[in-house]
Length: 108
Image (cartoon, rainbow, N blue to C red):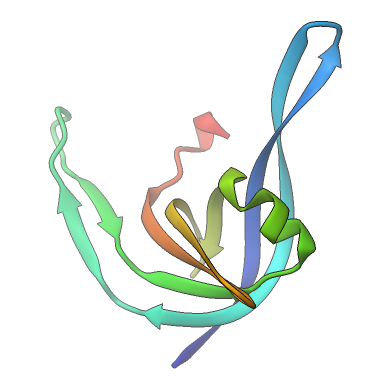
């Protein structure tokens, strides 16, 4: 089983001024295991080229912050690429993250 050590980003919404809410990223480092490696698929789109998606699962050792904010996990950095997290499944003491497509840097 391959090992993982890298960044996980959470989208946290905070009130910046009265009635104005903005999302910012909180990035934390985690370690864990790659449960389902080397799985990819092409997702059809309306664009000229289809999007590459991976369906890998990375299981990270969670801390209190991860348990409290698992619904806010946006992306994980794996193999030098930021991947969208499609599902986050709490399986104490871990959280299993299923990866999706590559993060569009203009969205972050």
